[in-house]
Length: 438
Image 1 (cartoon, rainbow, N blue to C red):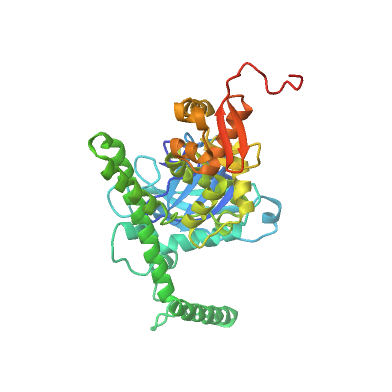
Image 2: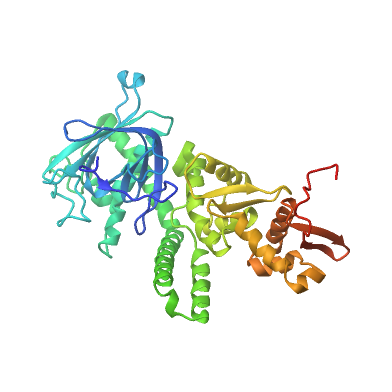
């Protein structure tokens, strides 16, 4: 696989790392990739096939992280997509999607990002690949999105700024331009039933064009919004790299302004949010992985733990119009137990649920609390959740949960008064609070 396909990078949660302006369109689960006439091709079995505006990405479902078995096929290397043929034989085997890709002289799938020349005619030969869909999924919908993405040629927008209409260039690839098929005005010469069907199709295309003209301003606004989101993400990554490399040479004011800028850019949005339309039956699994990637930055700012409600608000704000329900959020978090992701969902004894890093240690928090309650002022008056929140740099509600947990471990004692909760250091740690006979 490594000698034939292009390399695809994935995140720590198993989500593909998208290119600039790249958006997910559809995905299918339990997909095999099989060649028809390539002997050096190792079969790819039972993986996740993701269609984007730029690539076909195959991720192995057997690997929890997918770091060692992720492959990509640039859509610019696809020279032809075969139409699905319904027959009696097709009713008794798994759905198949056949397409033809260009292969360069070195035996790899042609990738214009690493090889010189344009995509047309650059490959020395072609190889027909078959995607066999073993699982449940909308194969016809995937094929339709495949056609649309290939014809749109969105990858050319990164190479040239003034590209023409994508549909015209894509449709001309699979249709000949010989004079015998076309009349003087450019229409196809068809008569009989084929002519009627052609007329019907032209009418639908005319209606679709009218609708596109009506929503032209809205589409332009959405396109600009995607560009702004991509620009904001690029600026955020540059700020993060600059902060890591120059942290020692900046003062507190500069660091504060950079963190404020990162917060603002983080709230702009997610470039390609997972939706039910694009993910289908894999919606909650892919949503869980994307959420695990998203919460890493808020967790780093919050000290390794964040309230589930706060994470829900941040995630929905970043998704823009593609909002999710609280049930979807909770279900996505509960799926982290099945995936090898660096975050986890935790529920305190009081019922409060939080998201925390797996590397988060309660012992470090307890040590900071103990150092706070042993101060002379705290020994006389105790500490409140607000005092602990200021020391730990977290919200008072989260600080209260940490104090209650420390109390259950026998580190603190609690005093309830009209002023609220007040915690003191436990001067009798050798007494087991679980011993009811004391």
